[in-house]
Image (cartoon, rainbow over all chains, first blue to last red):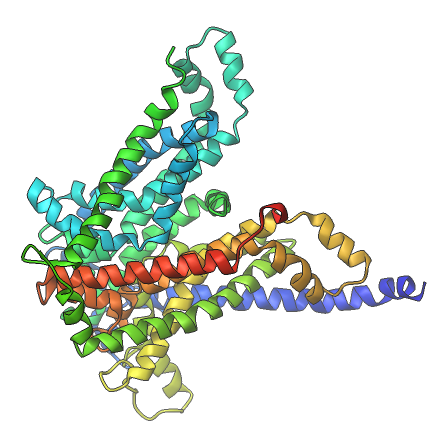
Amino acid sequence: MSVVAEIPIAAPAARKAGNWLLVATVILLSVWVLLPIYLLIVNALSSPEEVTAFPKRFLPSFDFGSLSFFINFAGVGRALWNSVLVATLTMILSIGFGAPAGYALSRFDFPGKGTFRFLVLMTRAFPLPLLALPLAVMFIRTGLDDTAIGLALVHTTLALPFAVLITFSLFSGIPVELEEAAWTLGCTRLQAFRKVILPLALPGIAASAVFAFTISWNEVFAAAVLTIENRTLTAFLLQSLGESPLYLKFAGGAALVIPALIFIFAVRKYLFAMWGIANR
Amino acid sequence: MHGKALPYLLLMPATLFLCVFFLYPFALVAFEAFTRDGGFTLDNFRTMTGNWKFPVAFWNTILLAAIVVPIQLVMALLMATVVSRLETGRGAALYIFAIPLGISDLAAGLIWLAIFDQSGFLNTLLSNLGLVDRPVMFLGYQSKLTIFIAVVLAEIWRATAIMMVILVAGMGLIPREYHEAAEVFGASPWKRFVKITLPLLRPSLQTAIILRVILAFEVFAVVAALGGTNLPVLMGETYNWQFSLQDRNVAAAFALLILAISVGLTLFFLRVLRVPKEARI
């Protein structure tokens, strides 16, 4: 009995202390994540002289010298364009191939289903960017070397497994009865999909498309191996690390980070659904 | 109509794609690693291990993984636990913790370069506090230890989010009743964490650890941004052999070694953290 009597007395004080600890931990961890990004932005928003000066100010001077130097630097505009192009192609390819597979996995039971899932899951046990090495040779033979589509194909191997698993869970979440109702009302399978399922699944599909875009936008190794003239922004930055001045590096870093922040914000609702299903 | 063929038709593009761009290059890389000028040979592996940089790169990579992954596991568990306890601001905290997930490893390297560079923020802070007279060279060629520490920090900063997200999703699958029952019986929060959360989180822990370990052996751009060539790692050497030394076959040998380590560790963790079928939620 005494235990039961003690709990109501001890709990509020302990809970209050626990709450403070909780809030402090959350703030500390948030600072750990945000402060380094802030410091990079400070550098990107300072003039080239300020970036190389010492000691540094912890506030940005909102001088766009570094950024305009970066934008006007030879090759940057083209690299930015290539990054966007490759990421867009990756997005189209991985959704185009992945969504039908996800739909099939969610709606049908058929022999070979397990094998396909295994193939998709297996991709995760491999450091995929490495596969760019043998593909480099294959691409030279087929004329795909140094092209946006060639790199996008490699990035699609990275993004496709996610697209399959995400769309699989999306379609699984939409009751099959809705589709069946459409069939009984005279829709063909395709019409039912287009008019009933697609509108419901569209936000999730868009989120996984953004995710595919981000994977390609951020990828460094395969991009650096497979592109020479048509370098993406990551390949460009990597290959000029040795000779480029600090302010160019930081402005380039910021150019990589800012879109990524927006992408992650756009898909934040789906982030956990995406990785939750990655558990299975 | 062809109801039986439809699922196969839908799976075909993805399957073909993975065969051509995943299975085939995988076979190709193995083939390249074991051949030179058309004949079977182990020379590529001999050249790889014979290079003076090989042991350094190998141990750097292993040591980096061995230090970074356990710290990340603890941090990710802490983040996930804290988030699951939060009543207000949960979404905001999750978003902030998940931010590094969307950031390229190269960008992460550049972010930490802004801190550790000679004219960077760490030196500014140290000199403002009067701890140093003039800026210290943290990332120079004779300061391997500080480069290593910087890479460790950058890796922890960058890739904890991926584990955190998987663990948060996994914690969401644990039925609340278990915790409530334990609370009724007087189990402390720590005891509940050790006896309920951790065992039931095993499938997610398995996924998180496997994914993260594979990523750890792919470490490349962070090191390139912070250390240049001063801190050789396996993936960086692969890149070097492909480009600077123009030897595809040795690069393929490196790739095969990284693949072998990744697959070996995946199988290891699948076995060690195996979840019996009847114990799944």
